Amino acid sequence: MPYSIRNDWRALVVVPLLVLTLAGCSNGSSAGQSALPTEPAAAASGAGLQSGLGSRAENRKITFLLSQDPGDSFWGTISQGAKDAAELFNVELNLQTSQGDSAKYNDLIGSAVADKPAAVAVVIDDPKRYTENVCAASKAGISVLAYNITQEGDVAKCTLGFVGQNFEEAGFLLGQRLIAEAKLPQGAKVFTPVEFPDQVYAIQRNAGVQKALDAIGAKTEMVATGIDDAGALDKMSQYLLGHKDTAAIVPLGGTPHRNVEAAMTDVGVKIPVVGFDLSKPVIDGIKSGTILAAADQQPYVQGFQTVAQLAMHLDFGLSAATINSGGGGLVDKSNVAVVEQLAGTIR
Image (cartoon, rainbow, N blue to C red; front, side, top):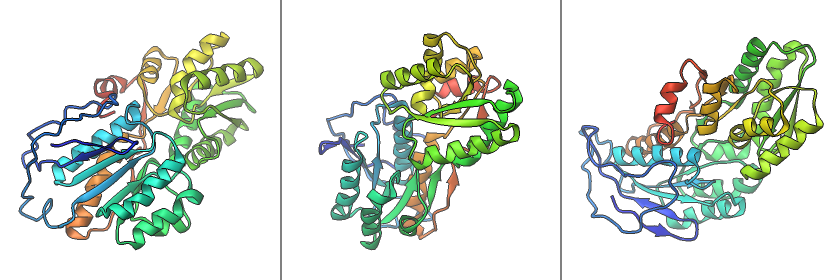
């Protein structure tokens, strides 16, 4: 499978082999690695399945746009799922990232129209910024599928569907778990730190948690942490120092979640925690009992199913479905060992 570097945002071009027996070459990359190979390997072409899946469409180019660095374990796992699906379904995958820069991400969406892929996968975290370019791609005949974060309204009319977590449903499950295990008092104050409080994932996750907490009259308070670990740790520590009546913490994003135990240690408090998204610190916290449970977005599913659905759409014209990648399950002490075995690649 050949790889090549393209533009400032490290686009990855993959021309995969179709593996009919689910055995064959591996791309050799792990979700935690940010370095991309620079030496192309020899290309090979797959003939596709007898049904035509993997071969019917003449244009097999899919541009998969990551909004964050694939060196991050979460986004690296999404990338791994996308690459695995591209190999199985014999599509040419152009994996690009804006490294967290929303203006550059919008430019990537816009440049996809000029590149003329058959399909584009996008994270729509800002409808006001991205709607014009997403809809321009759709009007140009490019199939657009949202993953990880999507929106309603005008931009939704320009996408085929969505692969990602039902944020509010997952938040409600976590809130219920917190009430059941932590025995919070009536009117409890719950700290809900999150990278970007104004983004739809934060709003919906917090709404789900609050919906559950309404049963005991508890209230949440969102505080922005950003995506820098040191900055997030400092902001959470400062909040806990100034709010000693905090009864529980529900990190609404992976950055505050992986730093929550360190923040409590800094301040010298130990209060119940449930939260969103997995990482090694979160897995360690679940094992030690510091974190009661975590909602897993299953990022591998977001990458794999997005590419798989686009491949079936290209070959057969099948309509894409909206897939809840998080499901209704939580990770806790009862199943964390299985998750730990797959951490950094599939989970």
